[in-house]
Amino acid sequence: MKTRKEAVSNRFVKAFERLGIQSLKAIPEMTNPSFSSVPFPKSASVLSKRDFAQTLIRRWVWKMVIATLALMAVGSATRVMNAGLACPDWPLCYGQLVPTAQMNLQVFLEWFHRLDASLIGLMAIGLVGLCAWYRQVLPTWLPWASLGALFLIVVQGLLGGLTVIELLRFDIVTAHLGTALLFFCALLTIGTALLPYQPTGNAGKLHYLGLAAAVLVYGQSIIGGLVGSRWAAHQCFGFSDLCSVMNTHIFGVVPPTLAVLLLVLVVWRTPALSPWLRGLANTAGLLVIAQIGLGVATFKLRLQVEPLTVAHQSIGAALLGALVCFTVLSLRDFQAQRLATAQS
Ligand code: HEM
Image (cartoon, rainbow, N blue to C red; front, side, top):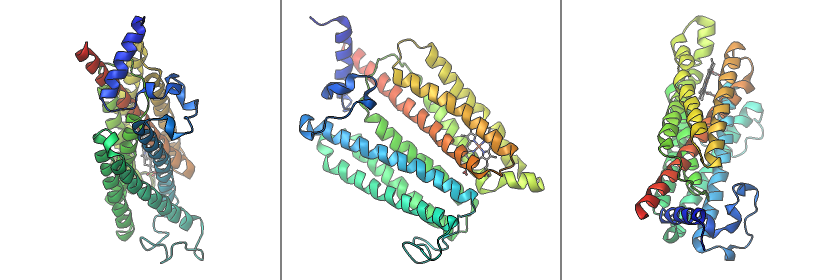
């Protein structure tokens, strides 16, 4: 005879399956909450075609997530090392695929940035291909989401080219960072939506809070991008110019910080929440504190330590990523809860 706990859990799994998302039951090893440490079954034959396709696409997307995070860090290093125009032409570098004769640290950064970007572009095309191939067994939103990601990376490539052609015009550089972050969020949304996650049905409307915090962090990152691309901090220190841009970024830290801290507080006070949601909220709380510390250190050291700026950019992206993952998982919790209520 089924216990009440099993019956409730089954209701969520069924509701979850109706959302077109891989259920934990299909991969029994994954019912363990620490499933990331549990190896996947080796043979595809033990998985149904749907589970195989979703697992393949999920792994593909998470690799793209890592490559994009690295790409943004290299992009930030390229800017702070003044290497943005180290390859004077585009798309090749000194008219070559590998400019061996001109190679130095600056050329390497710009060249590697383009190489990683091309790899991600190819992977985005591959993602669309995989989604088209397996479309019969995938949720309907997935092929469209993959096309959206491809669109963003094409725009990103064009903005990268324009950055060089327009000699690092600040609005193009900022748009380049903004699109990179949007692409990163799109990948995280797809990757998180495909995770074999067991909803507990206790997240309520936490996704609204997660989304608000993510939007505020995104806005703060764009202002940070403006500070970087206009060299506003340098201008402010050197000539008392563009201090308003710098100050907007400094005072702009208040809304996202309050939103993240509120999220952490509400999560702590919500009983029986999924450990995933707790972990992500706590991670976001720690990251926002680290980000402020790095920002203050960058500022106090008058931008003399380049790795600090690169770390500031990367932690900012990781913070945004944690909030996006939190939002998607809590939305899945909410949807499963609604479906389960409708069924009962
Ligand atoms: C939620 C908090 C914050 C986020 C998400 C954030 C994000 C960013 C981003 C994305 C950049 C662009 C980096 C690049 O172009 O490589 C940036 C630049 C910068 N941020 Fe922040 N930031 C935050 C808080 C702060 C704080 C509290 C300070 C303290 C004063 C600060 C100081 C700076 C400075 C000085 C730059 C310019 C670096 C340069 O020009 O090389 N940030 N920020």
